[in-house]
Image (tube, rainbow over all chains, first blue to last red; front, top):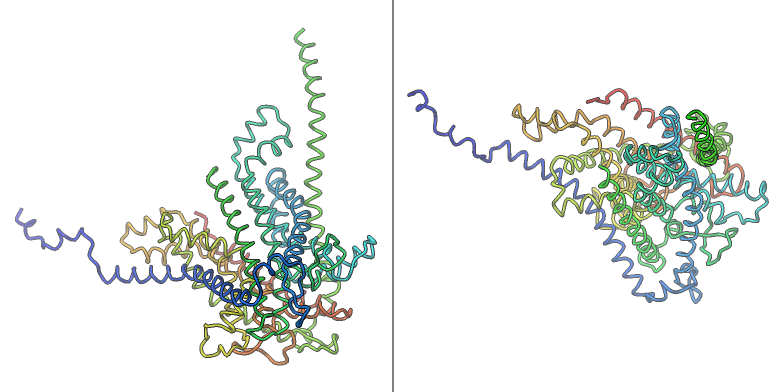
Length: 315
Length: 304
């Protein structure tokens, strides 16, 4: 009994937390780690500040309506004929994206469905890395391929009338470029559908294709939509394929045999000319970049929302 | 009677299912066709590049400076050295920052707080911002802008600026993959460590990080492969194709994608071949990096 009384008093209060050197160190570390995570937010803020300040200089000289509704795009000619109507550039961007999706959506979904629903584990183990290799090839290689191989192929072997730089070849190869994105995101979404849904449908006597098309696919729809939106976002923002194979001016036209430049390629091509900071041409980069950023931002937010939805349903 | 009845049913069922079987087969063939076209494109692309490019590969090609007049004697030396520099500097930036951010988000951040949710959505969005936009950021903020890197930011488009721009571009990739690797470490490991009296940071440093190092390494190499294949941001921050001396951190620089771009733009055949040769070098660098990644993953992967 007396032994217990002799226990130092401090021990009885040691259960409440005191700020020791050890816990201060822990707090410092936590702060450093949070700082690293915060850098990503600063990056976004940096992009925002850059685009807003520089574009506002641009819109100080060029009226808002002239930019967004004008149909004559020749920003770099200088003198009287300079015109800043962005409509043709936006049109060519969306048109190229449309062609790309026309190629990438059926092929990408086909690959995604096959790998998720039909392939045996061995086949999946062989072909999934192949799709990943396609995703890992630098875009400049696709650009070279479009210009040096695919355009001549379309022209000489298939007899399609094309200029050297054209929207058809650039658009199709752009589609091949975004195909792996669509394939792998949609495969993930399909694989996340619980097995019990498939078994239920088989139990009711459905054939395999019916199970896939009428049960699994609808169940994974939000993930598939996310795949398509992400693919579209990549196609809209791609630079080099279009820069190398698509030509140096946009065209407000349905003709795919002629040049179609997209917004990203315009930015890169203009920056390359080593124009002086402060001029209107320099400011055009930021106005076009801001427009592109807003377009992809909206698509990305839609995709993030859809991805979250399919994760919530089945996890 | 029961026998006859069952025969009829069977016939009916077979008639009904044979239509389904045909459709099943057609659907399957359509899917296989998609896979075939995808593999075909990859195969043709690689073979086309290899036929044109591989014969060019020699020690001279790797160690000569580029030439605008004579494609045959042109080499990739400054571009290759530039790319290797970019890779190392980029790694020095993204490894600490990316892993720290991933640890914060997985181990410390309360996902129900609004600011942590903002960080999270922000990283997801940054992962799919077009690379040319990062180029604009690099041009305005790092090359010409307020960030004066160690007194070198004279407005010149230097190598360090390129490396930082590429680092910002691939940082989301590192964070996302590292988070997955950290999440895969079971919580029983953390609880065991904490129960033995380790602090949170000791637990992370001694248990969580060693347990997730394979996944994190894979993520870093994946990110670096993406970084060194990027062309658009480097065009924006002022990389040049024809550099006639070796680059260093504070000089103007070239890189393999820029050299490919420049050669591909020349209409003459020998420059197209030069582009193919440079592509072979770039793909070889990527192949080596990815082999290292696979080796490390197999060597250090932890199964729980």
